[in-house]
Length: 309
Image 1 (cartoon, rainbow, N blue to C red):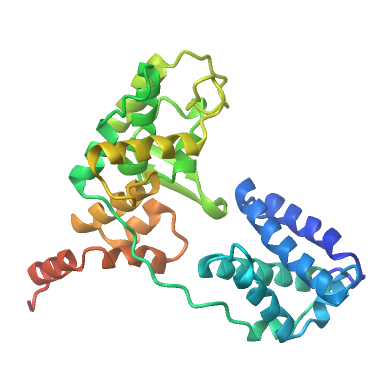
Image 2: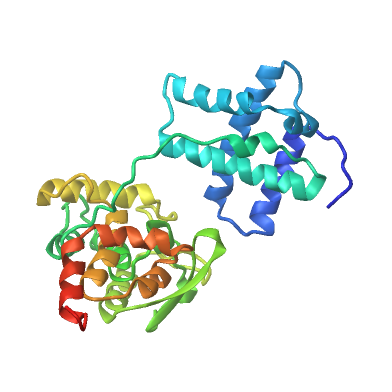
């Protein structure tokens, strides 16, 4: 721990963000989320105190001031959801832990703060037939065969390998042609290895054959219409069009295909620990949400497999 020295809270935040991106190797979007959440908190406290904020001020805050910030977030013209407020509180806690390690800044009042209750949600998975239809159907919005091949390849990565949409569109040319497994670095800079089915390899190879742009070895293979890096919003828009054609619910999204990957594995008898590793979840409790999707299947597996059933 560095000897305590009072500095501006804005300077301390910049140092913290460099720590997140450098030492912890968090993604750009994750670091931006931390920046937005902590900046909102520091601006509120600055206005509340009426003077420029220093880290010594953060040490003196009382529980009522933390609660006032959370209450303010719920009373805004566009109030934040309970989930978003919980995320902000988590970011503030992480920031304070860093302040304590780096400068000895500690605030026991933060331990007294609880965020709003968040409704427990169960992942919305598609049926096996719905997942297949979503991948294989074209919206006819794209006249270019390579774009249709691109969309198919991205979606089949989400369903066939359980990738997040961000992981799929960040696949680089030097990772192709895909082999039987693929090493990924996901959330929290956590590495995992996922099996790659032949149908996935074929979809990506078919797309690369049709792709009209030359790629460098470190460039992402999935490109937009004019050759730029593909944005997740483009695939999300395509899926919205497809679910209207197919009559699928609004919960049918690219991320729902990842949920479907996990749910269908579980229904087929896959064990939670393996599915946890395939998804890249840090905690088994996150993966356990899938056991609630189809409890009848679990009961059937238990009945047929347990020696005393």
